[in-house]
Image (cartoon, rainbow, N blue to C red):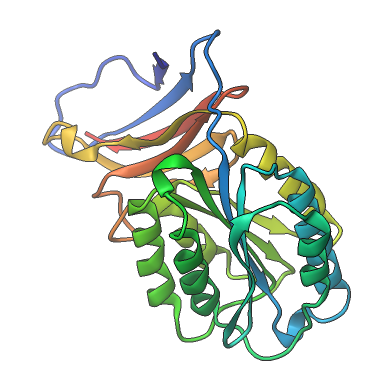
Amino acid sequence: MLTFEIQATRDTLGARSAAQLLYVLVHVTPPERFRLSQMPLNVGLVIDRSTSMQGERLERVKAAAALLVEKLSADDVLSVIAFSDRAEVVLPASHVRSKEAVLSRLRSIVAFGGTEIFQGLNVVMREMRKADLEQYLNHIILLTDGQTYGDENACLQLAQQAAAARIGISGFGLGAEWNDQFLDRLVAPSGGQSVYVESAAQIVNSLQQRLQSLGAVYAHNLRLLTSELPASVRLQYGLKFKPFAQPLLSAPSPDSLSGDVNLGTVEARAPLVFVLELAV
């Protein structure tokens, strides 16, 4: 069973007519001894190949993608989608039998066009659903350097559908042009991770860390049920510290915590730590 350690800024609150703020720090840890999740991975890799990615950025992204391929086993399923203002299936959903064949397809990706993230996400969801989602740990990894144009709402709706289907999303934003608020909102429904990557060289290390955490999971899709809070208590804000720093947002409104909050996974080797701001 999971162990919960809860610390509050105050043990008691005086009776007042106005709302009072209470901050709660929560540590969630798995049992010391348990069997790690042995579910194979179903990974959808979504690569931005828009014109702004040409040169070193795209080459670094390809290197990170090659690292992912090397880390996967023959039991894992991989889909690779390249997108600009339209999407191309570089690798249909399939088991990684011949890594060299996959790497050859990755090397064929060239940059052109604008940036519409929905195109890539929509196609990768279709590919990943070819596998039995109940039998895999399903995760989308988005690698991009810029903002999406005209399709933010469509992307956020798709993120809700992904979370409902037990498909996580992690986003890696490369370069200062990235819209970090949008990325946070995109990964929030599934409790995923958004990472700002300052330089192309950081992509490989960041992606490697994310893959390692996916392979050691005790519990999936841990949720905070705000509907179970007393009527006099309102959850105003939440921030996750471990296993990675990430704002906690809820659906359907990105600016409030009125719905259930997906806390993400509880990993084998690191606690889940988050803080909540409550108005009482």
